[in-house]
Length: 397
Image 1: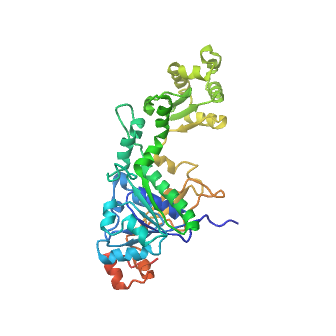
Image 2: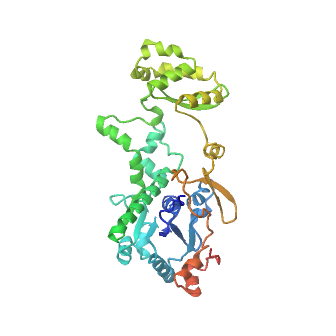
């Protein structure tokens, strides 16, 4: 029987990050079996205390990590981090370059002091004219044109998720995996830098290339030129909504037959796929009228059986009732430090039919593991007190 998928077991990652991009990088490495130690200031990561739409940031991307507090403004705190890095394989950070330099942890200096260390720097931009700018997910969405492509013309709209931050963390983890593989042969670390802006640029690549190849500037998605006969949202008799896509000749034929529009199949104006696309202005209202005569559940059965791409229009909270999400292993259970439980998805792949998960998915309290980790490094109680800002917990699990 195969053991659990923990390819990074025995790998120590020190993560000094906040918000989403850096923590998501560490979260992915933790899912792959790495020991991830989150270094927080004495008062804790500020992301812990966000409310509203930021409430889920810290719990989502800091599950299964150990937490220590270090006062890096103090000599003792900086020395403790230095000693910790001597035992570390990967250092993940998302500080401004100037801030790291002031603390004595500039990437170039770390590379000299720890030649085997892999440094993953999660930044707003790669090196270039913008490298010193402050970036956020929404900033780079506006800069790269993805917000332009998402909203109607003149009304740029950010994606309804921190997609760039999460994907930036994913690219950071991917780069780390490559560097770890390389180090097996070279014995040397690497200085990696992941750019939030460049990540978003990667996401709009298809629209850039379209323009470069045919000189045609794509319209925003709400006003796009369609490449398929049916690719739309429709209402049902019981006031539900469905997205339906008929993108092949087979889909077109099945859809027409199953919703009572067989006459469209013999219409001389609709005999090729391009004919069907060009006729969207008058065929889509016909489909809307026909589909509105059916209940949501009946249409689901029709499309499920016929292989037509479809989807109900869901909210994120609907996922807690979705049968596919709620299947065994679809959601992983965690607890906040106060004991409150929550459920969150795991990584979106299976290994031998199972979604991998780390040994622990609990969210550590601020400094839960300070004493245990620093004692392991050989620091005395007084040195731990000075290094941590005296905010660490007595817990040592």
